[in-house]
Image 1 (cartoon, rainbow, N blue to C red):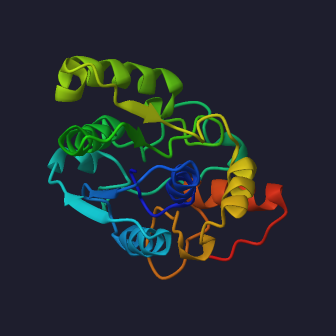
Image 2: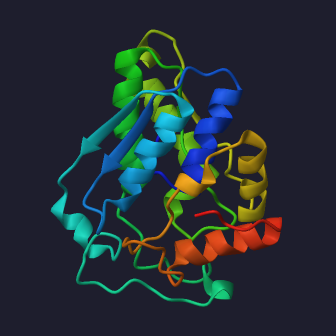
Length: 216
């Protein structure tokens, strides 16, 4: 389970547990401008009672993204424009390819049958690696390039939230009893969410649409 500590990935962890998967949570630090989400990932994994691993990567070129480069300004776009038009500056080049590759290595080593990711293609910032076609293509990579695939064992890529809007994700999280108060979605870091970045605005939209107060 790729666990960032945010609303989506935390909901996916509890989704997988509810379906009987023996989960292992994996968080990846790739140079994000803050590590606040790591606190949440640890808390969510502990609450779920699952093992938790952290991998740290050093990929300096990712600083072209405002999600990594601290000198770059995070966008503050109107909610109506998020996910439309050009790919935003918060796009991290190849991020989900990298994250899924790290998870694939762990899955191949441990004999896991699936990688679970919190990708969403409805209420999202417009990243190309959050779309269903990307995950289908990556499953083909796993079949062709892993020991599991060579031995005829399939490693699936599960993205249970891919077609849900944020309100639907909030409702699902509540049904699964996800500790929402522990999750963190803000791109900016700090003590409290900024309320201005894409992620904060989409999260607020989801809670408002679900008619639920955000406990975080």
